[in-house]
Length: 325
Image 1 (cartoon, rainbow, N blue to C red):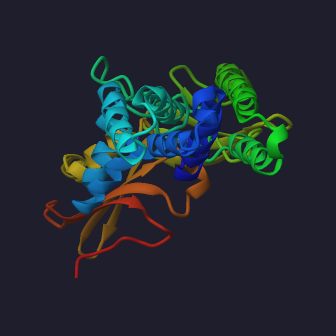
Image 2 (image 1 turned 180 degrees about the vertical axis):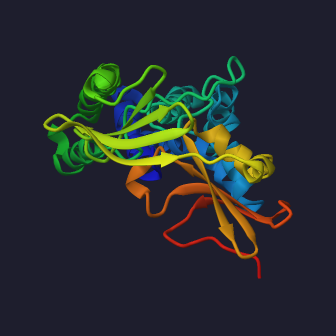
C-alpha cells in the first residue's frame, strides 16, 4: 500500500488499542500506543534509505528482508524500546503487542497488491503478490477517514476500541472478497476471450476503480495483450505488444538493472529500438497499463558493437531516455 494508507492503518490501530482499559485511562497511554502503532505501520518501508546508495539498489531490496518475519520482531523491539524511553510510566508489555500488530498489518496488506513482498522469508524466498487491491484503494482509504473523523468529532459517545474493531472486521471481509472476486473473474477470462489459444496466460490486476480490472494476456512468442474488464462491458482488449529478440536483447539482459526488473515482475515486454549511435533496449513492466505513457521500465543503451554504456530503471515520466553523445 502507499505511505498514506499505511499511516491511516497506524492511526486506526492506535484507536483499536484503546480497547485496553489501561491504555485508554492512563494519561499517557493513548499517546504511547499511538506513536508506537504509527511508527510500526511505517517501519518496514525504512528500506527507502537504500535510495541514498542508489535507486537500483533500493529496488533490488525494497519489500524484501525489511518485510520478512524476522524483521517484524526486530522493528517491534526497536520501536517498543523507543516508546518505553519516551513513556517509562507505560509498561512495554502494554504497547508491544499493538506495535507488532501494526508492523504485521503493513506487511500483510502489501501482500494484496501487485507489487507484493517476500513476507515469508526465510521460510520461503517466493515473492507473493495477490494483486487483489490497488496500492491506493479508495474503499480502504475512505473507510479509515470516515472512522477517524467519527472518532475525532464524535466526542465521548464514541468508543474508539469498538469503532475500529468494526472497521477492521469490515476491511478483513473486504480483503477476502477482493481475493475471491479476482480469482472468480480471472478463471472466466479464457471463456470471454474469442482469441484465446492453448497456453495463453491471463492476469487480472486491480485499478483505482474497484469495479474495473486491468487484464494482461501472455501468448506464445512473447505476445502481450493489454485490456480491461468491467462488470458492464466484460473483457475488452486495448493494445497488443510483441517482445523482440536477438543479440541486442541477449547482450542487455545480463545487465543488473534488467535483472532487477525481471525479479520484480512476471510481465516484462522487451523492445529494441535502433539509434544512430547503437541500440536502445527497453524492458517495460506491463502490470501498470494505466501508465503506458510513463511506464516502469529498465533501459540499457548499447553501442554499435553491442556493449552496454548507459542504463536506467524506474518510472520514465513521459520522457524519452536517450544517450550516446
